[in-house]
Image 1 (cartoon, rainbow, N blue to C red):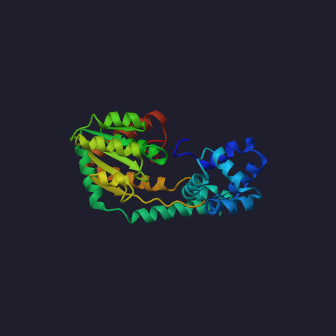
Image 2 (spheres, rainbow, N blue to C red):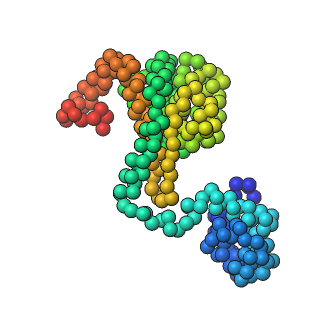
Image 3 (cartoon, rainbow, N blue to C red):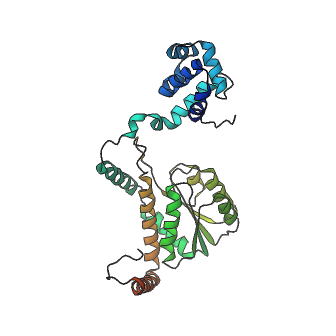
Length: 289
């Protein structure tokens, strides 16, 4: 059995095929995973009203070598995903107000991390770049990588975004000191992203990271634009960290636009002209749709 086995899923999968006594153990554990992880084999057997031998057989039925390994995996499951195991979290504390409050909070927190000089330095490197590569993977950073590309492309920057991990590695190997890589990762711990950045740095590329302070990715960056995630226990709400990423993207792209103001103004005028000619509408419609 692989070391990263999800013990909660494994128990749910095998429960129906277990003997009645072992099924009682499964029900007891699934009813209180954190508590079961802290119980002795005797206490767990008493809680499930079975023998200690039944607990041992149950552990082996789940793919664990013994009860000790079972408990270790239960500790891991409860530590990593405690808020995803609590059925009470399925109920939102409030309606839209709670979601909007979280958005306001993450924007205010990340606003305090903004350093204008750092954004200007990043913008200078982007304007001078032969090619700009934007990487994101997983969730919000995947979408935001494309958003970064949209913002820079309309300013005339040579830019491409990539989400496939294998292709990211390939592209990283094509870069040079004339190129810039922008990397978005809320955690800064994604192994595939870190590998691609390491490859890009090996070939001399300049790396701008929008990520968490103190993360492995932050340690590889030439320029760090820090973001701080603020997750809540309401697991069904989309992560508000996306708004922190978008704020950093808007600030960085605006710095690029201002740095090359005359060129940006002309390119944006052209884009607005062809859009209005195509779709019609008033002068205050957005540049895009």
